[in-house]
Image (tube, rainbow, N blue to C red):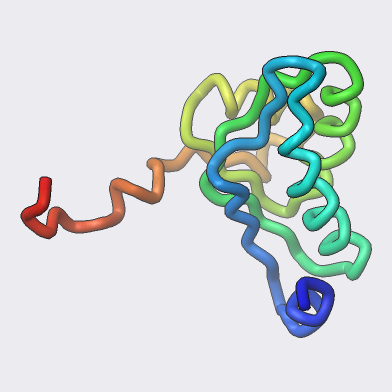
Length: 112
């Protein structure tokens, strides 16, 4: 289903739960997203990450992130530390944007 959806897409916007990180070497959950995002790139589809926090990435995780981030057509991050990391990973400056968290786009419905 994921492959078929990516094949049909003109552009893929990845929203990986808001976080692409591995604070410890044993934190491998983010690699699930890497596989899907890499598939999108292999299919030649434009890839946008929105909105996310990046890092930290220790050891081999950093090498993987260094291959992923610069391959995105646009990386939208939620805070300056993630912006700096995206640039340090080799993402071109013109492909990195600092944006508000998507939660701030919703109007208050009165539930607080």
